[in-house]
Image: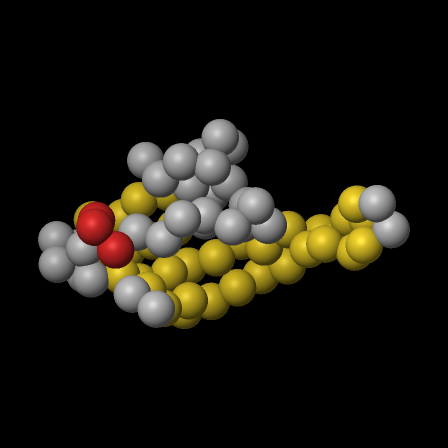
Length: 67
């Protein structure tokens, strides 16, 4: 895994078709922008990833895109 989840907070749990799914706000670290993970649908907008090579931070928007 080219990234590390540093912290995770469950914001809410919802039921989809009888299955319980959590919406999670995450803080991640990865080496570079090339290592940004494909967001999981359970990751909340506002989740953050620190790029270690540049010390930039990318945030997950409501469309599921790192910006």
